[in-house]
Amino acid sequence: MTSVKLPPLDLSPALIEAAKVSKAWPFEEARKLLKRIEGRDPSRPVLFETGYGPSGLPHIGTFGEVARTTMVRTAFRVLTGDRIPTRLLCFSDDLDGMRKIPENVPDRAALEPYLHKPLTAVPNPFGGDHKSFGDHNNAMLRRFLDHFGFEYEFASATEYYRSGRFDEVLLRAAGKYQDIMDVMLPTLGAERQATYSPFLPISPTTGRVLYVPMKAVDAKAGTVTFEDEDGTETTLPVTGGNVKLQWKPDFGMRWAALDVDFEMFGKDHLTNAPIYDRICEILGGKAPEHFVYELFLDENGEKISKSKGNGLTIDEWLTYASPESLALYMFNKPRTAKKLYFDVIPKAVDEYVTFATRYPSMSVEQQLANPAWHIHSGNPPEVDVPVSFAMLLNLVSASNAENKDVLWAFISRHVPGVTAESHPRLDELVGYAIRYFDDFVKPTKVFHAPDDVELAALKTLDATLAELPADADGNTIQDAVLDVARPIERYQDEKKKGPDGGPGVSVSWFNALYRLLLGQERGPRFGSFVALYGIPETRALIAKAISGELVSGNA
Picture 1 (cartoon, rainbow, N blue to C red):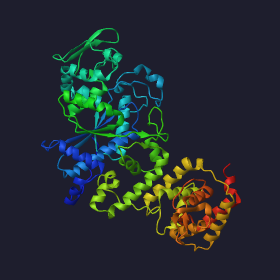
Picture 2: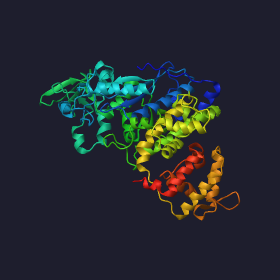
Picture 3: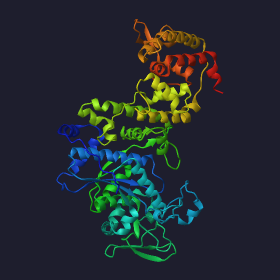
Picture 4: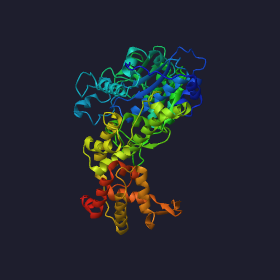
């Protein structure tokens, strides 16, 4: 069990009343749970469960599942006035056989003799104190969850099967063998039907998890009989960790054995959910409430796969942005497929800051709809970040900053009273911005040589900026930049109206500025950028664009 304690909650009557009607998805799921437990002994804990396959290291999906489940748990605590105990069980399927050798282990050949053995019977290829590959990966999971401050209990399938915690339900499964087969067989092809068994015996001779048909299932004796790998007819008890269940029956068995109340899983499980439910009911349980979330896609719209290595890893995200920004990405529209690649990071960072900054001034109803409330389990911190992440990225781009000191020189000069010490969260963002720019923006920068129209516009812009006071604010600068473009036909937008009644300014003007001055297609509000970067520095940048120096730097 983790040493982290559940955070205290604001349980004021106003907040609880607002929670009863909140449309935020964690509250909607929590209200379903509330109906589920009507009439139940209130001292009986409500059990939330998440599953983990320890054939590999924890990944971004693991974070998402635990974070989202925690959000529903927090919402449930509020709805019940925190009077009904709750538990979050993170269950590791570490009795599963190792179906293939992972790519990232030090000596893959050394693991070949252990193929199909339970993960907790495979030697630990990484060395250290962990006895098995499964134990090592379980430790990584717990360290991972502890790092993010989740309150949870850890459960090992190996320990649960071998200690007898599943024995009662496994004996029930032997008695209901045909009922389980009747559920499973219609879902399988003819060839698979001929050899299928919900029971997977662990060979007493080789130690491997066997996918073999049963010759006999004796419900009264609680045993299964099968042909072992050496051809010997073997009988084993279904109890004590001698057998495990196939993964679909195992889902339902676990729900029945543990009285699970809530479990979420990805859309790839959706067609199997009725199977899990039916097997849970056959074994005397009540199927839990489900929450099915959409899968993540890479930048090409393809499903993210650990084996393909497409999409983002959690380490990659956390190299360039905070855990809160990742939690926001998990909170937003969980039932909508979303692309998960590097370009989404800056927006997630700035959206989190916006939500957290606005939180204190919101009504109770608005606070419960604010992602910051759910990300921080009802206790959002005060956030004061006077410069956006998008702005920092463009500041890095313009200044070619390679360390924090360069950026802080600009920030401190134009945002009075703000320092790395007074604004540690902003200082953190400064570090993220430098890393993100170096790895993802800088390699793609391409400066364009200005054509005749752009050249004339840049010269006018330079002259206009020269007339502004050195301490002009972002709004003043933005208005001046707009005035430069108004008479230029290329940048006029007939759908907009200027202050003199003429056409407004098209976004193509600002796209041109960022393309010419920063080698990028997009950027934040240009006037704000100039105010932060400095008018003299911006004029120097314009001079380089006019002279062709920036374009020559492409090479």
